[in-house]
Image 1 (cartoon, rainbow, N blue to C red):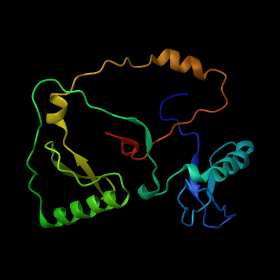
Image 2: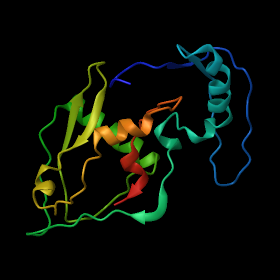
Image 3: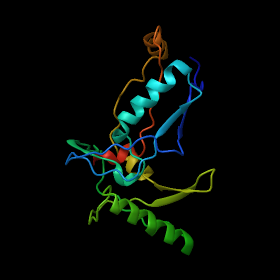
Length: 184
């Protein structure tokens, strides 16, 4: 399958097909999820795939506040060389300052960040997306410059493609804000 080949589209349905009540104490209540409808998929797979996604809709976060995290591992950054890096904030306009405060508050509310008195500080950069939305980014170049480089070999594309031979499905998964789900 060539890279970027479109295999199907997942759309949000306008009609509620059914509601699923969750009553486990570990999962936060899910606010009015819209059912998932599959289009542009081989008709024989549409119904089972739609059913599968609807059955496991609680595994997908529709907003940042629904993201979970793990306590099974804590990521550490191995540094070589000098101590804490503290960058001054970049200059921003009043409108950008308001956006920054709003984004920080959203992340605090979603419990993906917390208040800190760390001697380490990196500057924040607001980057405009193609659709006009603003992405909150952190400039970690100075931290990266003193970070010990790990050696992880890239998978071989021929071996990866060999593993796909004879399979019925090929899927990709975009982990929204996956870096928020492991403590640093």
